[in-house]
Every structure is written in C-alpha cells, then in structure tokens.
Image (cartoon, rainbow, N blue to C red; front, side, top):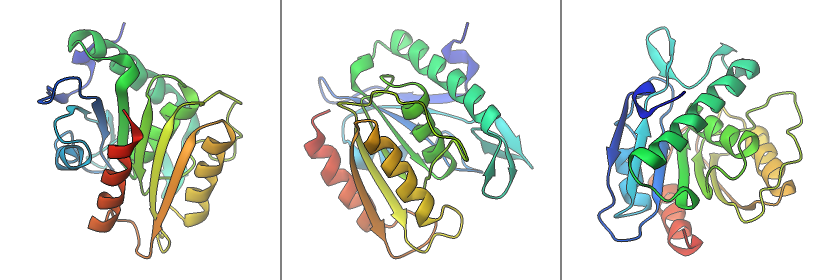
Length: 210
C-alpha cells in the first residue's frame, strides 16, 4: 500500500481558506523544490504538494524511464503513473486535502507525467497546467476516458526541439476529444517556460474556478 513516505516530497499547507491544492511535478534533473515558485505564482495561497521523481537517469531525477531522448518507456510510464496516483490519494488523507480540488502542474518530464495522470487516472485531478509536455502514450491511442469537467492549460514552445509542437498539439487533441476543456498556448521559444507563459497560465488559473 502506497503512503506519503514512499515519495520524498514537500508539502506546504494552504494559506488561504478553501484554496485548492497544486500537485507539482518537476522536469528531468530537478527535484521537489524546483516548481514551488511556479506553484506560488499560479495559485497564491494554495496548498503545494511537490514530490520527487523516483527514477534516476545518470543521477538525474525523472518520473519514468526513457529509451533515449524523446522516446519513452511507455510501460514504465504506466506503472509509475499508477504509483504516483496512489501517492496523491494517500496525501489527500494525510494532509486532509479536498480530492476534488487538486490541480497538477508540471514541466517537461513532469508535464508528460501530468498528462499521463489525466489520461490514465481520469478524475484524480480537477485540472492541469502543463508546460513543455506532449502526448505521453507514444504510439498508442489512449483509452476513451471521460474528462468532462477537467480544465487544462497547455503551454509549449513552437521551436521546442525536445517536445515538438506536433506532440504538444497531439496531447491537446487527445484531451479535448475526451471532453476536457483545453486552452493551448504557444510561444516562439524552445524548451522553456518564459514569464509571459506563466502570466497567461496564472490568468487562466484565476478564472478556472478551482
């Protein structure tokens, strides 16, 4: 049985009454502290739950294995996503969180994992703000799950050499086809999270009603 002790993580309680919870998923080589500033910017006063990925690639933290740059080990992604989902469920009990008001936000490898949570564990989170991520189930059509009521913001770079814009547009389509309310934004840069994209996501979050 998964507990909160199964993942190294940081938890910051909400400082605003009835605030949602942000589940923060870092990118390759980062850790549980990396996206805390992003979480505070996206949803001031929200609770922050930020675990560390358990896969090590040449000493770099990741959420799931990859076979090479840009090629995922999809079977490992499926297993790791289930493990992460169980951790989130345990954390809702440990920290007395509202399970209907959890929003996942991730960058790069964390964004791919966040998209995996949406497609593989529908209903686990109420929404997502994902940056520099693409379609996680490479070469596979996701199951026809119901994502009605799930609100999603996607931010990607049109010149991203790691997560191509085609992959970003594919995951937007996959989520939309399953009923998610998707807002997909693109910037002219590469594999990064520019301030203007954070500003757009913050504006979206404020109006999303979480």
